[in-house]
Amino acid sequence: MFGEKIIQLAQSDKVMEELVNSEVKVQELNNEFYELTKEYKMSSHSADYYSFFNFSNIYFWFVLAGLLLLAFGLLFLLAELQQKSKTDKTVVKF
Image (cartoon, rainbow, N blue to C red):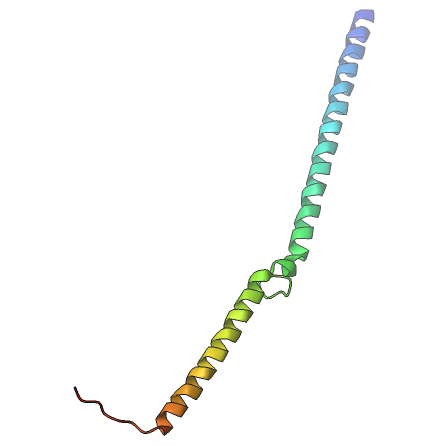
């Protein structure tokens, strides 16, 4: 009877250690899960920062500058074509 109580106490300490170890592991996993969810929320809320149409995006400025240059080029081409149609045309024969 005394031996059985010692065995039960030894087993209960072992069980208690396992419970403490599993509690520590669950707490670590919970902290890791919390960090991952926090990182996901931060990445999903800052989606507008990664947008192409943002004034802090350098490629957006390159596209705007390119479109502006294209508009001026087409405007000058149109003006040149309208001027050439008003001048007299001569036919050169070889």
